[in-house]
Length: 568
Image (cartoon, rainbow, N blue to C red; front, side, top):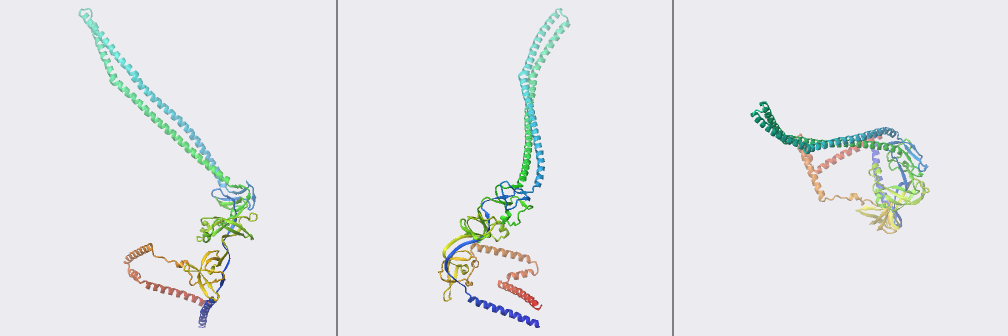
C-alpha cells in the first residue's frame, strides 16, 4: 500500500512539473525577443561545396585486357617516369595458353585452305576436259548429219539410179537376145536349151530392174528419213549432254570455290583470333606514353566508391582506370553541387578555393563546366541525393598543389558592395508573401511584407520594405506562417471530376460484385450490407473509439512498465 502511495505522489509531481515548465517556457518566450538592426553592408552570394584538386590535363592509363586480370607488377605511386617505362603488368598466363592452342588451329586451317585450293584447280581442269569432250561430240554429230545429207545420201541416190539404168539396159539386151534366140530356135539353128537360157537371162534382167527400182524407192522414202532422224537425234542428245556437262562442271567448280572461300574465311577468322590473343598479351604490359608523375586512379578519384588502393595482386576489369599521368602543371577543382544550388551555378563564375593543406592560402579560379546530368553513382548509392559534377579551373597553384588534395570551393554567384540584408531566420512566409516583424523603439511589433533577392543560406538580400536602422525580430512568431505545401489545394476541374466519377463507378461495381458473391454465405451478406449502409459519421465514431481504446492500452502499458521499474 505504501508503494502505491509513493507511486501516485511521484506521478502527480511529474505532471505538475511538466505544467509549470510549459507555462514558464511560454512566459520566457514572450520576454525573449532577439532583434537585429538593419544595415547596409557588403553581401556576397556564394555556394560552398567540397571537392578535390585534379590536374587540368592528364593521360588516363586504363586496362586494355579483356576480362578480370590480376596485377603482377605495379610501379610505385609518386614515381616520375620517362616515356617507355613499364607502369603495369597484368597476369595473362591463361591467354598465353590460348595463344599456343590457337597457333595449332591456325596451322590446321591454313592446311585445309591449301587442300581446297588444289581441289579447286582439279575441279576446274576436270570441268574443262568434260566440256571440251561434250563439245567435240556435238561437233561430230553435226558433221555426221551434214555428211549424210550432203554426201552419203546423194551418193546412194546416184548409185541406185545408176543401177536402174544398168538394169534397164541389161533387160533390153536380154530381151533382144531372147527374141533372136527364139527365131533361131524356130529355124532350128539353136537348141531349146540355149533358147531357154536366153529367156531365163531376160527374166533375170527384168527382176534386177524391179529390185533396183525398189531399192531407190526404199532409199528415198525410208532409209533417208530414218537416217536423218537418227542423226538429228544424235545431235540433239549431244547438245543436251553438252549443256548438262557445262552445268555439272560449273556446279563442281562453284562448290570447290565455295569450299575454298569457307576455308579461307575460317583461316582468316582463326588468324584474327590469334592476332587478338597476341594483342591482348601485348596490352598486358602498359608503358608510359610520356614523361610524368604516377598517380593511382584509386588515390585520385573516389567517385566510384573504390577506396581500396591499387596494389600488386589487385584484380582489375577491362577499361578500369589504373594510373593518371598529368601532362601540365595547371590544376582544377572538381566539386559536386547539390541540385538545390544548381540554378545558381553557370560557367564563367569566379570561385575561391581553400585547400586543407594550405588553409591560410586562397586560390582563385573560374567555373568551366557544369554537368547536365546528376552523378549516377551518387544517385545509385542514395536515390534522394542528386549532385552535379562541376569543374573549376585554377589560375595558379601549380607549384604547391598536388592531385587528390581536399578542397572547399566558394563559387561567387553575385556580389553587392552595399545592400540591405538580414539573417535568413528573420524572414517567414505568410500566405505566399515574405514577411518580417519590425519592432519600434516602444517595443511595438509591426508585420511588414518585403521584397527579397538572393541569399547565401545565411543572409538574404532585401530589395524593398526595410530601411537602414530599423530593428527586426530574429525569432518572429510562426503561428501565421505557412509552407508552400500547406497552401496547395486540389481544385476539381473537369478532368478531376471525370476521374472521380470513374473511380466511384468502379468502386460501386466492385462492391456489387462482392455483395453478389457474399449472398450465398450465411451471415456474411448481412454484415456486408450493414457496413455498406452505415453512415459515414457512424463509421468515423467507431474508428475513433477503436483508436481511443488502442491509445489507452498503450498508455496503460507504459504506466505499468514505469510502475514495475519504480517498484524494483
